[in-house]
Length: 339
Ligand code: KG4
Ligand code: ZN
Image 1: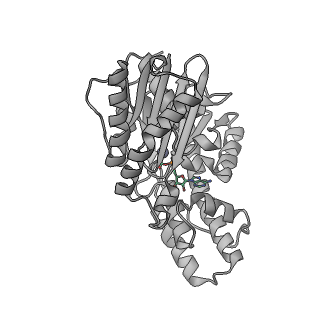
Image 2 (image 1 turned 135 degrees about the horizontal axis):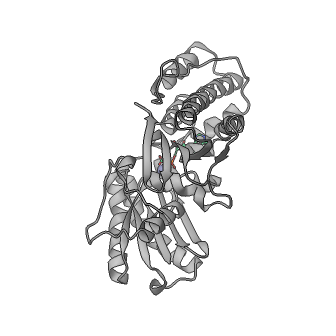
Image 3 (image 1 turned 120 degrees about the vertical axis):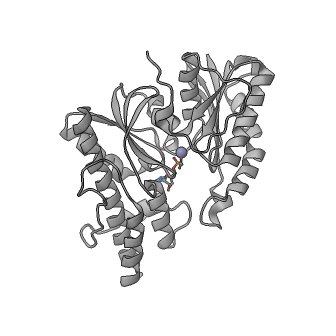
């Protein structure tokens, strides 16, 4: 079986073709970063308009890359949410229409399930069950994963997502959008111990998190010190350390609570080297292991959508002719696949 995957939930147009025997056949990505850079964040209307321009040419490029004709495609998977409704509608409408024209089924895919399953595209994929630390620009949650679709949210951010906190703090430091990766690079030159940021909500039980206070703490620290390069690096270091420490503390509790030892990190912030190293250390302590996607599949992409869609098709899930775009869609409402 061969699935075309379409991702347009935010500021990346991602297209991929996944074959259940041969694996990933094609993968095309267009990032709108430059389009939104002047605004310091994603402008939804501009995002939708750009997806309108890019989606079909990228599908054509992916078909050419995989040497596929329309009759070689057995199903179309599109991101149906969560995300920006206008952006979602572009991929959903094109995906549903192509499936109709090609006389194949279509399936709506949950964006965060796509992220969660992205490590399955790697050579050494995690076995179920595991604890997933989902850290993107829009969501941050710790999920107990018993199988595909069997998700129990153990805790989540009650305000900013981890990626959002990275981006907002980076903006305060004058870095371009999206600042997460730039702040991480700046932190590499930082000195340990010069500043100490709080580890929010770690002094009380539970797995919920809060990251919005860190950006305020960063703003106050920036205002109270000189703006030289070393100070900026030291602030970046302390901020990143606080986010990673908080996630490690919450993840450790999730492992204790569930008795699980395998950790999956996914979503844009799983590209963060410090977070990967810290969670690898935690996994080692409990005799477990940590899994994450290759860097290009940490952030939004079509491959994870094609893969997640493939699993849904194999479970016999197909949608009717309706176009589904669901901006708010809790991950624990998905149908569990019993293998
Ligand atoms: O998953 P994603 O591509 O989009 C959403 O679904 O939200 O995540 C994007 C987020 C942005 O906030 C970006 O700054 C962050 O992931 N990010 C990083 C790094 N790479 C991407 N944050 C920290 N360190 C990184 N290396
Ligand atoms: Zn995402």
